Image (cartoon, rainbow over all chains, first blue to last red; front, side):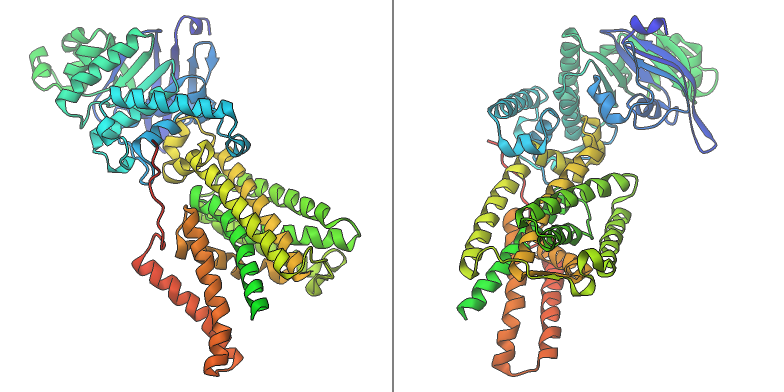
Length: 266
Length: 288
């Protein structure tokens, strides 16, 4: 692939079917380093499946996915994470017997061998201390400090999403895929989240965000990719979405004015 | 009386080591191993076969530990596509296969008669002291493992495997390392069991032994070491007390055997009904 060197993430002709249901057909798009790309589409358009295919949780039926120059479409999920793609889930579920801080620290996966843990070498203790400090910082940044010692399962839906983001950021990935980060998150917190994401992006992190909130998309994303029934129907700047005929058709199903999309913004 | 107490406590510490091993898999990793006793059996037979062939019993123990770890690695990898409950059934089957092999391959294992004349390393009290020291060390090591990075990864895998995978943990490798560590500990216990009884036979591999260990864990509390040790102590105490009651109340031996099982069943049932997480449930760990 000649294009793979120029893009951080490159998705080429990816197809995926569940039984007879073709969920993704010939999906191709690229993400440049430093972009924040919004992935949009009506319910059932294949956004989450696409995320699952990129992160190795679903095997693709065909097509190619590359991170930088490395083909990743046949790799297992944990290997893809190690190459630098982290993700969050739409409906995160969290452990009942681990505190928020412990879950965040678990996201630091280095040196977790049996012998290393048994011996408790100084290097390991340092790494553990670093992981704790980093987890504290991210927890503080995403306003989870008050619930730091609660069982992670006791968090509200919105807080679980934030904890999911904390976990995704712990490994310092190059690319983060966020599945509906603002659904269920309080509006005040949403503002902080926008700021936090922009800050991370300024530090060089590339983001792909599945989202239904148009305001959020407009505030954060530099480009939008729109999926409809498993196909990409548009790739444009967020402010051009409302005047894109195919996007309007995807969301509203017929001939509607741009205003109608604004009013019905999902 | 003193001898009886020493032997009861020695049995309790032997079972304690095996229960700690099972807890590594079932308590932290959430792995439903119903063939756990196979690891102890391999440790015991490793020792028995080495002694029979004239080698040092320590070599036999090492051989048994290696065999058990090998079996553990295989079990983890063979069953990586199975859902946890089906995997549990597979482990039960593997332990049964080993028991049948041990019963029938007389040239190697002595068949149903087993292998006798295994030297007891120390006598009575000294053996008990060694066992208590070993149990203490094993408990400390398990504690360190559980609270450290490996245990954290295991506990995350137990509760949220998808989250663990998307943090970059290789679940198959986590499972097999947990099972192999557990197998090593359990095989040491099995080998010492053979020394203590100076005998090894296919009865060591009975599925009921695995379920006895499970009972201890469920009564005490899975995933927490104090709970596991309490469970071992309680079950072992119930086992040892019934013969006393028999002498005291004057019922016959058949009834005593049945009462033993009935008593443990009743304790288990009561725990399941009123303390479903065991007498000492696992707590969320504090990180200062």
